[in-house]
Image (cartoon, rainbow over all chains, first blue to last red; front, side):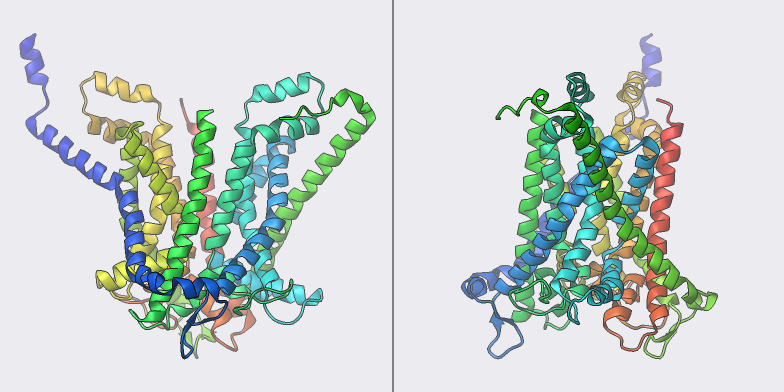
Length: 299
Length: 293
């Protein structure tokens, strides 16, 4: 018996292969941590020194003119432009996206639901440069035809951002509604509630954390969106003063100026400082979303 | 929480009317969310299709990109996506294996999960800054397909890890236990039993990232994409045109481009992306039907 077991023991090299592969797997396993740290180090290396020296001027001025003499690095107008586009787009996309999520999760017949989910998934895949193309070539002429002044503007950007975020809101919203246990629905219906009363009084409160996560991730997506807003918002550094005001966002500023900034120069470092800001804003938004998810799991 | 008003005080007719109104409103919102985007896609196909011809796909752009084809942009996109996959697929799949098969529920695994979530949320322009700082300058790869491909690889990595992990975890645990009881090692179990069963799911995730990498513009803008370079790349150290960059350039940078060329180029990019995604969706449907457990 002992002899049989000894003969069946795997050859020695199997053990070493096992060790080697496990080491490789563990190495790749930490790759996400390595890269998130590397991103921070490489952005911070260029941007932190600049941030330390200029942070006062950046946060108190609305004048962004890194090529002026003397150079001006006020970011308030850029922050306002970002907030303007993101806020306006969320006003459009959140009610519509969540309504569509409720419809898909609870009201749509099975066949239509499957079809619409595929449509949503395909719309989510449209690259941001194509959304920019749509904004410039289709949406902007349409807005002018409807009476907007000539030229690209923040409203244009907000609509494009809203169209881009909608698929994300719909699919995440639908997921969180469907995650509500079936017994909740049955209990509400058994009490004589209509379907809408069941949705409004039981499902939405039960799924509110998941819906909040959907909105938070939508915000993160909008803040970081680059190509589309670069192409469609009109690219004018100023505090938005009306619906048709052209604006410029933080992301668009980096994308537009990085190519011409002298590598290692002050302008270059200023753009990395904007990168640090974006990195942290999206980091906080994602952290918040992740915390909400974990709390939900604990409940 | 406040107790809501009892429904019984509302007349039944009102409640049924509210139910119908709500359903109508929700259906309308859904239509308003989906139809404009669908109409836009249809419009791009309608305006772009006349520009498509054999020559458009196979010829070099000429006269400052206002005439000719988009061949180098198509080839360049293939190169960049290829390089990004060579990096992100092996690393991503091994990382997914780590999280699903080795890490368990440890605190460290949670930290890795958090890093993945945040890496996935990093804006594309920040990836561009990272690619410029790390690959172009620090590692001195220059503005090249290699730099741009690696930047795209880092960007797509978290999603490949997540989808691999999900595909592996969908393989039932008893499959593993059965192997371990036979005295098969952990890696042999993964290689011979778990991976083959999860492979189609992993493949779906990878295909989705192919289309994402092909469509991204900001990360390649400063790391390897050329504005106007009418030739095919020969090594990974070359710069190249890409489809996404070409759409950007035609719309915003080059004057006097005929409208149908702009629509045609956007349609090609959109077509590539939607084809890959449709394929992934079809694969997923096929899988769901075939699944035996």
